[in-house]
Picture 1 (cartoon, rainbow, N blue to C red):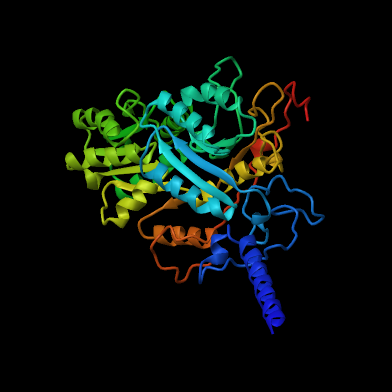
Picture 2: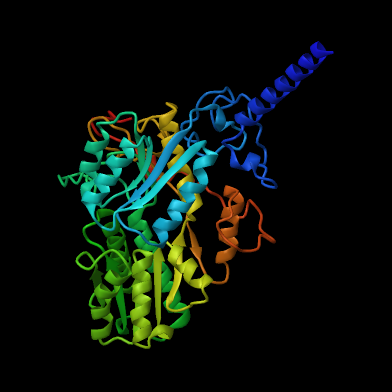
Length: 447
């Protein structure tokens, strides 16, 4: 009898061990474990060698960083990742939430979101401290002027991998033929900043034609919000001013509100644009807002002057506008050229993950997205992946934002998903023609 009891106990222990082992294999996948949130198409342990692998099983370097619902990420090591920024604000906060959403899906531990409050020395200190604590993957948004110092620090830790978000990392060189801001120091996921400035003004022109058709262009004040110490942001300003001149033929009514001495935040924007709008003799204003805080600042000043109905503010961004509309506030801040943060964050954290696993390097990822005349120096081939944008408008913004939730399997926005189809938008862009121009530089040898 005792022998039989022992055998039964051994059998029960064996069953418990098997159950624990089975559960441990999927413990890092939150969608797998959360009731009612099973991940569509997920087949853990399916044996796919890489995410979004080619049909022959090889690495697809153009797609390796995008999330693959059929790939078992838990078969790889678990890394710690963090997001460090020079400033805080709605856009940075929503970015942090997006990275925190994606981290466990990529089998990563979310370590931290840290802002240094405009202090570059503190930014570097935060970076060093997190490296010392074992964080291996970073998304970084420092002040553009300290990129060389950031890279110098990171080069001491080859096991650490990183990407930037808000702006391409550049070395600050300004020799003839060097892109604005200097040579690339790593890959960049984002947008054509000059064209974003252009698109903002085209939307302002459209609004004026629809709402102020009888007002001469000369009677309208145009403001380009600026932060001139940031080369990428200055590209937006250049695109905006060039397009205004081309579309209106006016130059005397252009004003630049530069917040470089007041701060890249809401109050800094108010301090920069307030003296322009309050002292110039215009009853109509069109504003290219540059970033959300500045666009909200311009709209606030316009409202104080009683000119809301006569004015329009647009921006390249949109997180602040979405939050403003959600709170029931509508003013002259009317449109935003936007990419939802979950779509923005996906390939960025995905690239860091690909580097950490040794699937790709900064010189090999996204080979179809290498700019012929802007890919770093000393033989580097850093790529610049572009993302699609959508104009946020009050009547339709909820539809787009909920679509991004469907795509990312997230719950970032509290709206109805009724009537939304996964094919309503796309997270991908066709490769623009400027990426296909043959390069004649010494590194590419005309290829």
